[in-house]
Image 1 (cartoon, rainbow, N blue to C red):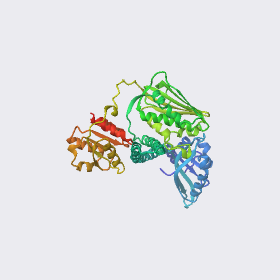
Image 2 (image 1 turned 60 degrees about the horizontal axis):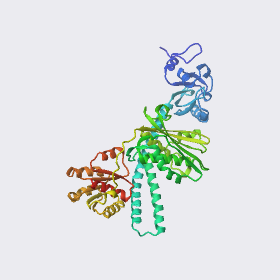
Image 3 (image 1 turned 90 degrees about the vertical axis):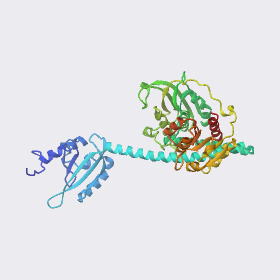
Image 4 (image 1 turned 180 degrees about the vertical axis):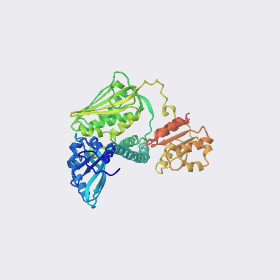
Length: 504
């Protein structure tokens, strides 16, 4: 078969028929940029019929308005005999736009001069969107790891701060002015501990202990704190459900959801207003947010009378580190709320208009828990007899504080700076209880406990950590004679855990 010239007046060439089968837009222009060939897929992709496209300038047909200056620059490059490839924002005849990957190449005549330009375009909108999602997911993973690591170190420091403050308060040597300063520092450290909890929730390194909790009761219990946090010009209204409504969630995380939404509402009303919280029971058909299929839900709505959220920002409010508060916001509050609720099978949604914004939170509903008699507190049981403890902590500033706290409670304490150091010590037969950090360089605390329990299966263990995951916490909960103390903690929390295990 001989070669055919590209002429489309009286017939269609074999080459043109082949190009019509290609699932890419193939366009040929002359040296002036006027279309002289427009294959069938170009009609589909750009919406211009071939008869309308032929003879028109390519710059008028395909580039989006925002890309026309770039298109003109590309045409100049091609007119000089160069080629070009890359992503390009293009438009269809109906006005819609998409991202195309375009390869433009010069067509040289027999004399070596430019005779035309051929361009091949492929719609890569979906592919680029998926790539962007993957990059975002990877960034969030890196940020999450970083946030978790920072929170781990910060929790160790906060344990030192809170512990020494408690010891200072118990010393009886403070003047009234000094006691007031200690209280201020303690409050600030407690708020900092709340921030690390947000970081850990965001990075999914928070240790959760889900229980059945009445959402209305949790909100009612927080009322005094909420009223202190809200300004005097913000009216707080709470409309509870007529009957108890339970969900299974870590109580601290539920408090965090409520507090974050309340603070977000307060900040949305700089001139004052009304904050309304409502709790109601709903079924799956009434849920507007994306949730697990089926089931019943507890609906918490938090409404403020602020200026509202701009429509173009509504899709960003749950993004980590997105904030409209400038230097006054971390951008973690709503992201943390969404992470907590979704990890428990629920969903979050926001609707807004000028003068009113409502966040809808849907918790999976649970049955009411069976009532059990409360166990006596450590103080009610009295002081346990002095025992021999093995303390393992790799943080130099925290280690002596913990030893001092345990010794002040009447125990003899052997101190090790690592799991390997603890194993090398010859005190194991005399030890009544192991107190160990979990996250340490080399062997971790769980590995140490398992090694010691291979010889002493009954050895009780107090694990300490502020940075782990649910699988580790579940593993500890399944271990006999073991408790988990979360950093940052106060001295009496540690001694209470030790007493609880020694009491049996």
